[in-house]
Every structure is written in structure tokens, then in C-alpha cells.
Length: 397
Image (cartoon, rainbow, N blue to C red):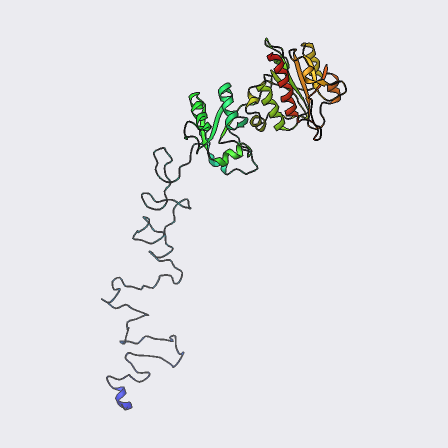
């Protein structure tokens, strides 16, 4: 097409001409303009972009320039607080008063549950009162931390608990049993203890075996632990009572709890009226002692004194004869001691025996004859059992 035809009608007008299209005055950069929209051409009409009437987004129009320029907030856009919460017509996000998480009324998501007795489902904390202790606090406690029940001390094992339950049930505050044995047949000793304790009005609580292990300091609890109050020692003068002549046992420095428990067991079975121990350098009544004694520690009177020599003097004033089971030149066989007299047998600790000052304050010295001496002497608990047996034999005749 020639240049003349371009300027006519359907062609593009020459530069600088009137009409629509591109218009510049004074050349590039001239005048106040820069870019000038074409008059009558595409998108004509004054100023910038104008939406079509009746087209997409018409009335009130899709894009509208913001008043005040860039950075001016518009109504209904992001960042503008909304009224009426989610789904409101004017805006999107509106922060709540007070901040933080606040559950919607009637809406979904997390809603705390009423912790009343009728609330169902999920986790519900248990009452941790004394009548229903939470087992979680025992399970989560450090392994080195001892477990304490309803009493100041515990006895464990079927025989010790059964004996205390039969002879002194008022001393028991509660009993813990292995839940796997509590409902067994009536021939099971733990099930029998459960039945007897409930009949006596003693609270019985089921516990996991690991909890019983810790309550008994990993002892052989056999699935039952009984909680008792503090141990009460008996005054010395209360041991010398009754119609029968006194038969007592005094321990001088027996520190092994198993020996102490075994002596208590023998003393109880052979009819002794009580045992005397010093306040220091001696085993005291503990759970292990109660277990070893098969419960005799709870049934036999035990006196604790500050000074054994002074206690021997008090016993002499009560007409009790003092016999030291101690190998000396003046010692005689235990069978030659008159067992029908009021007596107190004095036995020494492991290794040292009766101390010289204690032995000096005794009326007799006695020994238990041995056929061989290659392994030393009898264990103190064995010596106590043999000596008590001989004295009880004499009294029986």
C-alpha cells in the first residue's frame, strides 16, 4: 500500500495529525505529557484505564483506583477488621478482644469438657484424695523415692500380714494387694487376706506388682503389703508381768535386720515374754524385720533402752536372773541353767558377742555345746533359738 493510501480513511494517520491513535506534541519528551491516550481509539475517554460498560465486572466496576494513592486502606480488603465474625459481608479477618485462643460459641474445634461425673469420653482426672490415691503418682515417682501408703511403715508377705490381721487387726490402716491375685480362688492366701480384711472393715486396694515391689523395697511381698502406724515400743517394766516367771531376750549390738527378725520369730514361737534392744548400734523394727519375723514383730512386746547395763540393773531389782550366752571360763552348758527361774538371756552381736561390761553384769554365763568347731560358733539367731528351746523344754516338765 502506498503512502497516500495510508493516510486516508482506514489507515493510521500520519504523526502529528489529529484524530485517535498515538499523539505526541513536540516530539519525545516534549510538553507536560509523555504518554497521551488516543482520542477515539481503543480505551479512549479521559484518564488511564476505564472499564467497559456492560462488560465483565461492570457496575460498580472491577478495578477502581484507590483514593489517596498507594497504601490507603480500602474497605473490604485484607487487613481491614470485619464486623460480624467469619463470613461477614464487609471484610475478612477481625481480631477478637483479649487476644489468644477463644473457642467459638456453638462451633467446632476444641471445646473443654465438663469434668462432672456424667461427662463422657476422653480423659477425666481422678480424685486424688486419701480414700482413692492415684496410682499414677507412684508410677511416675523417681525410682529412688520410696513409696508411702496410708501408714508410717509397711509389713509385707502373706504370713506376716495374715498373723497381724488375725491377732491385731486394729493396727492395720490399709492393705495393698496384687490385682492379679485379689480375685483368685479362696485357697489363695492373698485372696483369703482380702476376704478377711474386708470383713473386718479394713480398706483393701488393688495395685500393680511394680508398685508393690517399690513399697516393699523389692522384697518378697508375695502380692500383699499392709500399712501400719508408727511402731510403739513397750516400757521395760511391762515385760515382767503375768503368772509365769519372766522369760526375756536381750540383744547386745545385733545389727543385721534378718538376724533380728529371726530372733523375734523364735522368741514368739517359744513363748518368750519380750525382747530388749539398745537404742543405738542395733537393728530397729523395719519392714524387713517384720517380714523376716513373719509378723512376730507386731505380736511380741519389744522394749528399747538407752543403756543395757542400767536395764540389767533394773531387771535384777525385779528379781530376774541374768544369763549371758557367752563363751568364758566360767560358762556352763545351757542345760544346767534352771529354766524355771525368771530369766533374761543376753546374746551378743555378730562377731563380737556380748561386750565385757554387759557380760560382767550378768549372774550366769552359758554356752551351747557343739560337736565341731571348724566353722566358729552358732549364728546369733540360731543360738537364741537353741537356748530358748532348752529353757522352754525345762518349763514344760
